[in-house]
Image (tube, rainbow, N blue to C red; front, side, top):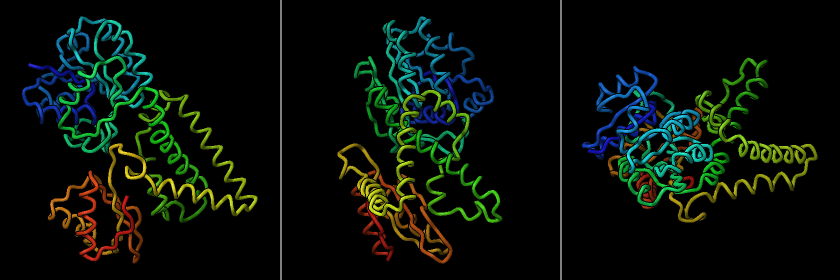
Length: 365
């Protein structure tokens, strides 16, 4: 019988356990966490079959080891694993948000002939901890695989184990991964947090202040609500790339600042036009066949039950949603609702259905 050891029972570790349990009920899942209460909850709710107190005693018994802690802890765990008498065919993976650091830490383990596959599920929640775990947390999210020296068979085995996550697998190098997430995830979190902090300072003497924040401001700063401790660790583990991209972003801001001061109409127009063109062309039909999401933007009235009417119509037609997001809503003015689907066909069916119900489709992506 296959035994899976998951070290770290927060949101990600518990969700992986639930997904494994769903697809492979015969697998034995062993949990380890520094918080004994998390393990007690996991055991009581049948997320795991047994608990472990030490990595040194639990790891040699495991067929699969999933390291689901912070990157710094993952690196320490890899150093420990490299000294242990593990099973020859053991598969070791992680869920860390930076990969060059992790793959470097995994080298001693790989030099001993053990298989390590770097991993990073691009999913999360505003909730944290073992109680927030869900088997469908990762559904339709991207899951990066960073094989390093691992053979294709190891990737296949990991995907089979995690098949109930229903993720979109992407295989990349450590450098590709860190560059992508630095620009598309890490930098936006810094920008959002900086904008919130700067706005708070700028409006500190205003009696209205941030009470007027709505629409666009809330949309672009939503991710500023992320966990401060986690993001401090992430930035420290991808410091070089993030520093480079911050410098490039600051240069872009400085350039547009100069254009504003000089009242350079042509440059300002080009600045916004270039951004609009790029943003409007996001999607597989323009950028290639990379697995993507398919969005529908529609106006919804400021009325009680408007949102429920949209979702109920989609549910009645058995059209599955990946995500739903209110981009802007103001009193007595139509808001913009973004609904996201897993494929273009479902999105187009939803558009036809909603148009027939007199909803105005603003855009399809």
